[in-house]
Image (cartoon, rainbow, N blue to C red):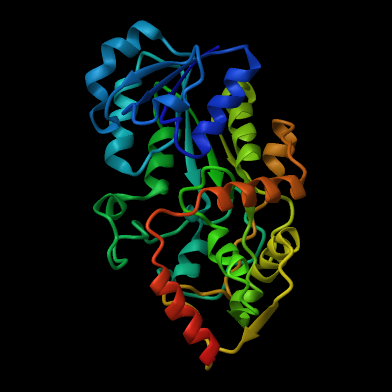
Length: 334
């Protein structure tokens, strides 16, 4: 199979490319800006270009005639239109990476939707957000996020008259190369031998589905290579959604941190603005497990340990130690 990947060298896409390449069964071509060439396996071709000017490469794509196009980084309506128009008549299927932030429950989690919390778990047929552009009013939000909405991406991909679509809705993804460093917030405190981690009591009990990056990559590879995935939408998530307290505890056990996890009421430690932990985000992944025979390829303990090892070796750039000292002083005061 000839597979063209838009992106493919950052976080999740990197691991997708590794799995496809290691299988030895597919011709893989990447389209991106070429800023991470050293991360591209030998034999994988790179077409350098800007995804916001993807139409300029239409003739080259037409010569390639990829069987499937994987779009790792769709943002919203405008950029997805360019992709669909560019590949019309060139490929028969596009697989697009979406997010569980399309659900109405997510809107309630961030306060953009009103009403009682949604019931859990969320299936692919659960109600979607009614309020579009979930990040447009966030303070200091990058310009690109003001146009972000995976709902619009999904509508364009799934409703195209000429190209068949497949959508994968991802949860919080952790693992090697995570540029959001989702474990660092807690690992830093543990590495600094803090006696306790303080957390709001509602946040501590909040459940959010997660998945390890190599398992997510495997799910994406199954969707790319299976005809069954045509015209289908799939949730991807671990079968058990941990509470935030359980997430911290698992990390602590693996790094040998023996401090206390202390839960505090709102009057002492309020939750962050724009976060409503009464709304859980528990994702049901039954469909992809049943239709594509998806299952996790990495034992949970290994997934956590590999993530921790990578995070310890690759802390975020420009860590402000003075800011961390100020946080610790505030926590000590509490």
